[in-house]
Amino acid sequence: MLEMIARKIASATVVAAGLAYGCGVASAADVTINLGYAAAKTSSYAVLADKFEELAEEYSGGSIDVKVRCCAQLLTEDEAFKAMQLGTVDMYIITGNNVSPHFPLMDAFVLPYIFQSKEHAYKVLEGDVGKEFADQLMAATKVHLLTYGFVGDRDFYNSRQPIKTMADMKGLKVRVPKNQVMIDTFKEFGAAPIPLAWADTPTALQTGTVDGADNGTSFIKSQKFYEIMPYFTQLEHFSYMSPLFASPRIMGRLNDDQVAAVMNAAHDAGVFHKEEMSRQISEIRAFLTTEGQGGMQTTEFDKSDFIAAGQRVQDRYAAEKGDDFKKLLSAIRAAAE
Image 1 (spheres, helix red, strand yellow):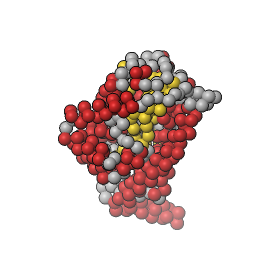
Image 2 (cartoon, rainbow, N blue to C red):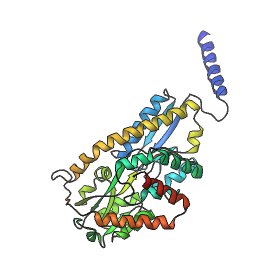
Image 3 (cartoon, rainbow, N blue to C red):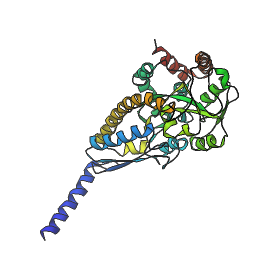
Image 4 (spheres, rainbow, N blue to C red):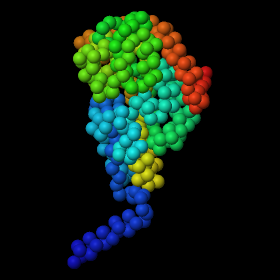
């Protein structure tokens, strides 16, 4: 009898607690968040995702359960942003250039050699410019940008020859993401860009459909492209970021304390991501270009023509785009002064 009474009291307590939060607002009883990314489990995305999982669960006192799904288990990057708008995906880490089709203002950050240094990049993204950009993105798309995380560089690799000058790029079939800035940049470099989705890239490289490509340095290692691409160039022509985004649906399911936990976890995970990946990059480049390890060949090269070509692309986009784009580009440039 006592056991039956205890069960009834416990049941009534749960119901009362649920009613106390009101309709449509999550209680401290448990929200599951599915967080996806398209890269390998050993990629830099995992560093951000795993730390966010740890901190969100800790900061929420266990009321949030984050399920990390790597390797495009949920969706591809090309599909994920729209899915968050629709509420069919909770959270996703997406490389910035793959956000541009959904929010064209992102292309200002994709422009070649747009950041003069890492200090410049973080000053922009962690300051007023980055906050205003996130606000604009949410106003236009309803998707929350929770943290920018680490800012890396895209390095170049190919199967044909070492790159010593920009002339060596002439005619190279280069895989590029489906991003117009990146397509235009490689045309300016003299290459023959071929837009391909990320999911199709490994096969295109293996079969020789393309001669080369660029990726964030850590991705060249995590995807083991060094096994099929013999030449490495520390080109650093594009900076990249891999923000953590959240759907309006999942944010709307959280109570105030849980929202605070998610925002704090995203901030702290972003700081951790920046520090950890900054530490790793020089080690990864050394691995890629060391005989008996990655074994890729590299050589000193003249970057001046590449930078001049990048400036031409910047100026062309500044002339062609609308006022919001011009304002953002001016703010990015001004932050370097």
